[in-house]
Amino acid sequence: MDEQAPRRFEVVVEEGLLRGDLYALEQTTCFRVVNRLSGQTVLTFEGRLEAGLSTDTGQWEDFRASGVCAVTIAEDERSVLLKYHDGHEETVRLESGHNMRRDELLKRIRDARARWEGALEALDDAALVQPGFAGDWSAKDVIAHIAWHEREMIGMIRARALVGSELWLLRLHERNDAIYRANCDRSSAEVRREAEVVYAGLLEALETLSDQDLVDPGHFPGMPVDWQPWQVIAGNTFEHYLDHLPVPRT
Image 1 (cartoon, rainbow, N blue to C red):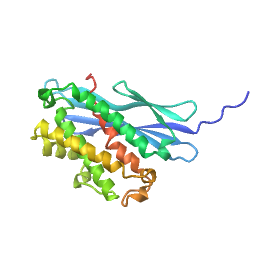
Image 2: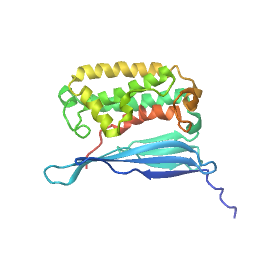
Image 3: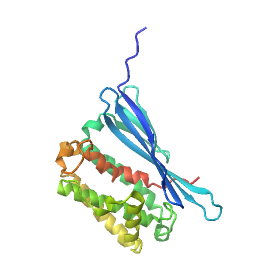
Image 4: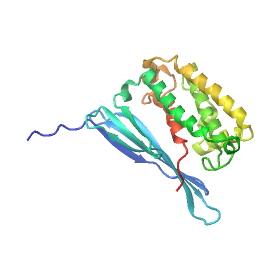
């Protein structure tokens, strides 16, 4: 019997440390698709688990899972199947880890954005400002949070350099809190109007990129050589939208 050829790729799962404070915890799980011959990571996906401490019971409750929960490499090793915590599944071409094209990136952004906006359509004005959509945040707070990250990508793309807000120097929960405090008193109508403008600006900026821009960190001075520009954009756009889709609480 012929021996089966060794597989070129494998999925490496890395569970991050629990982070947070006395009342909230967060853990990120990273799924890396690795070329076993070169050792190079060609695709990266993330899932997130959050929990809040109940002031009534003193127990960890309000568990929320978002993002990717499983990554499987197809038998022909030409694609990977992603499963999300909300039940959604997606197939991604494996070679896109090296050759992400602008058109493919735009499609993934538009597809994920449609899912995100679809989730918001069910919310009326009162529901938009109701805390609890994401932890203590309302849907309006999350809209502003997403728009902030999109605006940062617009700045990076226009500058063709790894530039941005000083808030990136803060730890994740500190940065998120600063973004929240900057927007929490704004009206939902104002936040939504701005979000529409920012998203349109993002698409316009992305259209100026070449396919080579997306895979060559040298096109963005200041970006580490082991980063892929498209992955930076993905983490602040389509992956970010899916991270904040509402999911059933347990």
